[in-house]
Structures are given as C-alpha cells and as structure tokens.
Amino acid sequence: MAGPQPADPDPLFDPSLPHPARVYGYWLGGKDHYAADREAAEQVIRHRPQVVAGARANRAFLARVVRYLAADCGIRQFVDIGPGLPAPGSTHQVAQAIAPDCRIVYVDNDPLVLVHARALLTSSPQGSCDYLDADLRDTATIVAGASWTLDFTRPTAVLLLAVLHFIADADDPAANVATLASKLAPGSCLVISHLTADFAPGPVAAGVGAYNALVPTALVPRTHAQVSALFGGLPLVPPGVVPLTEWRPGPARLSPQHADMYAGAARIPTGRR
Image (cartoon, rainbow, N blue to C red):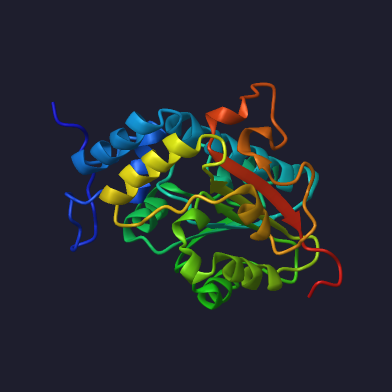
C-alpha cells in the first residue's frame, strides 16, 4: 500500500527528489513524505540505524534548551532558523507553555516548510508566532524581517538546530553565525546542534554518503573542534559543546552513541555590541 501523499504548494515540486525536511520528518515518525523521501531515509538507516534515535534526540534537545532559555534565562524572544516540518513540541509551544507572551519567528527558505508552518503553527493570544522566508546565509534579511516581530535590543535566543551541517565550508558557516550573534543584545543566547562523525566515523560517513547521493542538499558532518569554533569564542553555557544527549539531560538520559550530534549554547556577554 502506498504511503501518505502530502499536498505540496510548489509548482516546481518533483516528488521523485527526496526533500531534507521530509526525510527528517520520516525519521521523526511523521506522515508527510513520498517514496523518494522514504527511500533516502531508509538508505541512511541501513548504514547508521542510530539516525532515527538521533533525530528524535535532537527534537528532545529542542524542548530542553527552549525550556532552559525561557524558564532559567527569562528569554521571551526566539528566532528558530531551519525548523523543518511542524511537529509536536515546536519552539513556540514549549516557550509559550512557560511564558505565554513569548514571541517566536520561524525562518526557512523552503516553501513547503513555510506553508505547513503557517497552517499549523499558531501562537497563544498573548504572544506572537511569525514566519520569514529567508536563507540562513542571508543574515541581513533574517535580522530585518525578524525585527518586525522582535526587539533586538532585548535578549533573544537564536536556534540553529540541525541546520548548519547543510552549509558547506565554502559558504563559511562560522561567519554567518558571527553575523547573527553580532546583532544580539547582551543576555541573548545562540544555540547550535550539529551532525558529527566523531562517535562512529565509518558508519556515519557511509550514511552521509548515501544521503548525499540521493538528496540535493548535502550534509557536512563536523568534528567537536569545528562545531565549537562555530560559536566564535562566545562564552558557553555549561556543560559546553557536548554530545547532544549530554546537554543538561533529563531523567530519560541516553548514551552519546544514540545521537551523532554535538550541541551547545552560548551567551552574548555584556559589552559585546
């Protein structure tokens, strides 16, 4: 029996091409995917079965870090860049459960993601939930567009979860991160999670190779040193850049091998701007 066939608003859409957001959604257990997406996802699983647990661990990290930012740091403004297809426990849901007045801007340059987001991601009455069509590498557009909803003179959290590994070294992801960080007020936070091959070089390389052979947007795994460098020397929130499941884990703690990713958060210090 054929799987679910989601509607796609893009007239140039080609269902024979795997789509990064739908492949990731498949690993999360979502329903919006086509045969090409499922084939790409399963090819990666054959080489590195832990990719499924890793995707779900990244989703759990999103909830942990947003709770920390809203409850412990008092942050009420969030920019979530590259959020993927909507799923339970999205940034605005986690943040507004703690503080209903939180304001969130989702940023993506994928028409599919944006249409789903506008249809399914709705804010609490006290807060705000907006959507911006922009590429991560176009930092000027991100800041200008998000400024319609957010006040960048106040602390803001920028979330870059499982997105920087789609930026090639030639496009200088560290420079893009630094530009975003330079626009943030003291007390703001920058959060990154990123694919790595450090824990299982052979299987992860094989999985990445299978993914890159099928999906038009290539993955670039990075080492601990390379992921740490993306923070540009900003002061890190303890425990620093660590295996994703080790970042302030809850009671259901997983071993690092279950997620081939690093995660960390950094604060914008006073006097930085």
